[in-house]
Length: 380
Ligand code: NCD
Image (cartoon, rainbow, N blue to C red; front, side, top):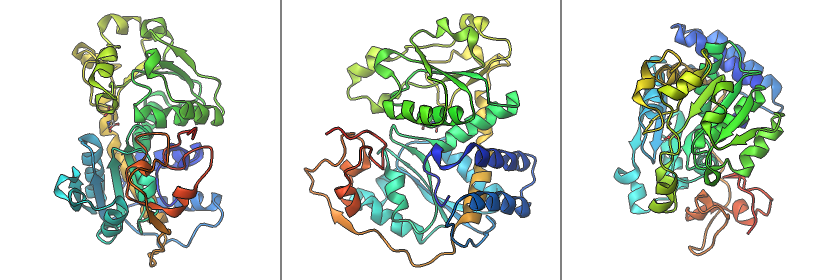
């Protein structure tokens, strides 16, 4: 694993090793590089053709933060993680103050930032942007949320929280509630839960159902077919985990389309009374109206603790990626071409390929069934 772009980049075995490391880091055991090396050896042994690694310790290294979209938790918990590992951070929040405002391409921004840091964490409004970035970066890239596509580090902390509270993930019934169409955390979490053997119940309005490519990933992970329902009240009593999500206003094609489904769900006292006494309530946050404040004092409400657990999880991920990073060599960039402004390369409007001026030649010529950047099925 050179980059961390998708939940499918790690097997359940590898995620479990990461969680064990995160447990040690949560306990203040940050200097144990031998343990990191053991995890890394385990990763590399399972993957043929892994390059020689330099086994870098995070101390003294620099984490780059390229946040092209708003963020509180993800940005600050990566910063906290790197500071606790005795490293440092640099970067930007909002591209307005950078040369992107002058028309710089993502490929160029990433090549430049690679010279200033040892690891690059990226959040971007376009689906697949971190994957395109990884083709031009000479350091490992972490996807910190790309459009409506994926948010795999959030899924890692969600899985870690469930494992910590329940002692296991296998066999649990997890309800994923709300905006399953645009909610990128669910697009990473659902295949992750399926890989660990959880049962999934999708709860959404018909217009916000989970995209086909996510259902396909869930099936590939070997899970039973997920159940889909519209009303939370119909299933709440059967759930071991209630995962609430925000309706992603910023991704809707129009304000009317958002208005039609805003406030579709609200977890409140009466619903909690119908839930299992030992269920967990999770939310990636920020919440808007989907969890009533009265739920906050319920001992089953875990969302604030879940956010705090992002720090040890990200400490573990950063340590593993730095230790696995190949020794730096001059980077060979892929042959790159200028995309004609009127040429659409992917049927998904939000796909990075439809927005960047400079794209890899291979992406222009790619005829596969699925977009390698945003996963959407190509039916143009
Ligand atoms: C999520 C995101 O950015 O996708 N936030 C987060 O990172 N915890 C969820 C959201 O914005 O609704």
